[in-house]
Image (cartoon, rainbow, N blue to C red; front, side, top):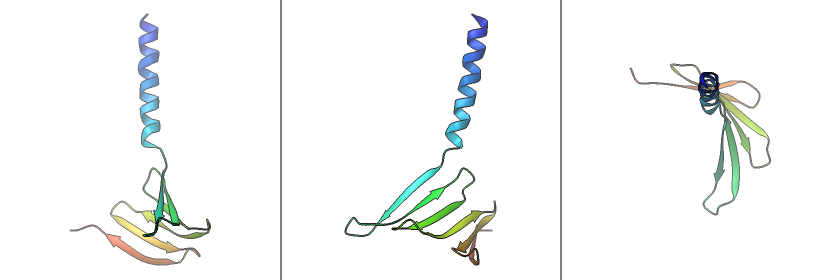
Length: 84
């Protein structure tokens, strides 16, 4: 009986870790409800952006104290920093 409790506790810990590592998908629509793009954000807050045809249009990388933005060619296009 004690082994079942320990195994159950371990499984709960493992599955709770999966919830934090999930990928977030977001779809963007215009005022007519048409799909104009989407984004995929990983568990670290890094996001890849796609147009309505599924082509990569850029990405953003969470650096801990801000975010750096890149275009589809990998060139840095901007940064965002938190308030001091």
